[in-house]
Image 1 (cartoon, helix red, strand yellow):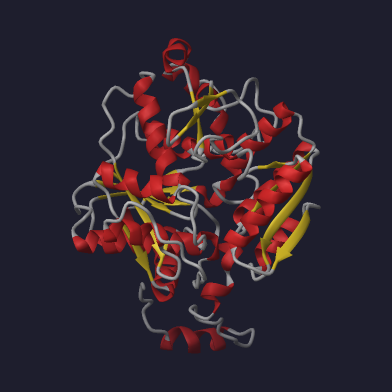
Image 2: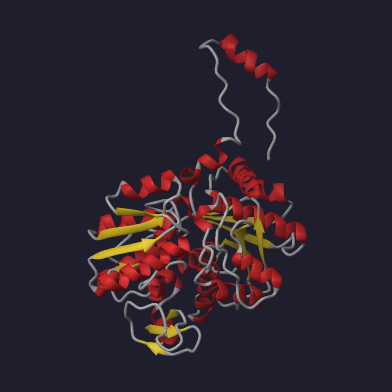
Length: 413
């Protein structure tokens, strides 16, 4: 196991570095798949606890995981009521809104990154974040006994700032966009030799996303779905889920080759990757000032933008973006059909899925998996004005019946 530049293929030994010193291309973890295939098999995986570490041979750690032992193992839900609402036959929700400990898929990437940070000997860790990553680094660092410095845009949702501060992390609210926050963190990481999960630890951190793909395939009976729709912020998730499918085939856990089409979802107010795909350009145009209620996806210059756009095209998929009103509408639709309260990124993903179905890009008679990556409790303000307020009545049966007898039938969004 080592690192390889995604631009020039130069190889590097394992170390806390995220870019090629020749061309500044991003580094990615590479594995000896032939050796892994000799020691990994379905029975071995299925005998292990139901968490993301059951696939540890395909994760970039040298020993047993030391951070986040309960992360992963989230449900893949057969969403029949939502499928009826969308007019499709087979629809699944991969629900990381109930991930442990901070209710987002970021717990996967952080547990890998901090396990690796410990292997490298870091005692202080940190991140640049739009919210969910901040929560996860703070919580998992507390569990691991590591000091944590978290840098976020100063206008982040209060619930996400509270959900970081409560774990004792040192939170820095930066007056600027996420991209400006990220540049500051790069300077801090290399000056103080701290382990920033999405900077110098990024190659290892990103591999944690693969476990969503591993679990999807296993829960489908060790096979791949035809279509997967993912939210895109930095752009890594869509590529890592596809990499997970490819690896499962390489090591013999899934016999059929990967034919899954990958789709990316963004908000209209910050859509650099979706715009790149739809325009046919090879590179994305950075969005200088993101403007959307979906702050968790508001990364104007995504680190993996070029690679995710290329992968989407190669698999025959597509990318789309949706308005803030569509985001709220689809948060409610998901909650009222499947009882899943997703954050704004979930509203983006479902709204884009609907748009792709209506465009005919995703056939109605083929299998679809929607990736829900965060919990709606973190972004309650976005739907607060869109839901009906409680009826206020006196504590009597007559008062209730006066409301009940005049109530209209509920209508789904």
